[in-house]
Length: 224
Image (cartoon, rainbow, N blue to C red; front, side, top):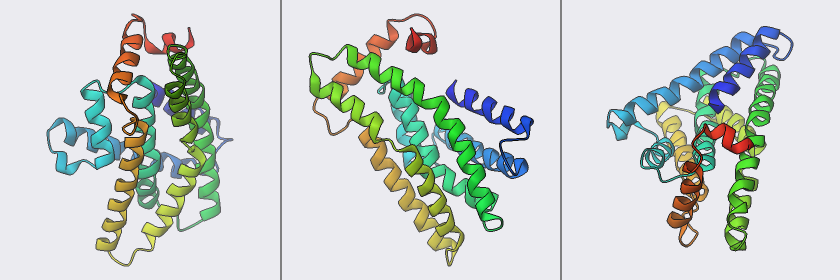
């Protein structure tokens, strides 16, 4: 749902013609991002795990096995899209010419994305913490997990990674760089899943129970 909302907002901005300097370039970038996600998902669903980046594999696995909360599902997807997919999409779309204009358009798209996501994740974190007031450490961990996810830093990192990929001396070197991006993104995914927190599996299951107790769409539960 969030991705659809974001896509619709970007489309509205493109149709308006006053937000982006190069709408055609941004459209290609969006398509490359979507293609990476769809290919990873298709490989995962087909059981071809070797064809799935580790950062996407962990996101798909915990979602399929119901081992993550709504908030974690959101952040895991965002983590992979920003810290892994975006740099590759930028490389394939091309950033060598009119670099400053490309960067401004990326920042405009990023602003739309954050504006759609932050209110949702903030409300989710607040709802979870209401149920864990008796465990201050857990509430603090949840709030810190959200606060530590630096969207602007991730976007800037994607741009720098794309520049590095574009000047790689060979496809082999570029492949090694992409593998390292995947590794770093996977480490962050582990942090988002609270893997270092004692009883994290129990905490997540309790939060999932809280979520499932509401019979309507999760978007209505968030804003209730």
